[in-house]
Image (cartoon, rainbow, N blue to C red; front, side, top):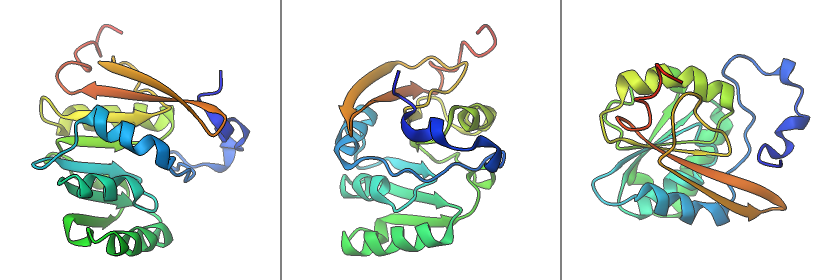
Length: 178
């Protein structure tokens, strides 16, 4: 199975507990992510580890208030530049911090392209802070003990990519029994 792509080649001992290598979401997947998440005006779209901002920029273009959380200063700087070029800078809040320390309670959509072990560590935070009905979209890595309401597979870059959609209040009700 190719869903983890080149992540299998990473020396895992070099990564700290929450550290995730930056692998940008492929542009050809962003429209699928937006469609699956049903991003539109009135949404508050969080990207946990936003990298160069490509996903939050698209959410902002679709009318959402976007929140870009990135721990790396160089990537956050690039995200800001890209948002200015796309004329959506004013629709995006940029946060230089660890996403574990940022309150997500106003999110209507959360996007994560992280590792499964990080998703697992985030699960209690998502359960505690997200409102019922909040959509959570992950790319390639599932949230352990949550059941997706929708899964889509796409082939791009020579790899199978999997997009998971979860809904708070539906996907997480199985946490205690799984």
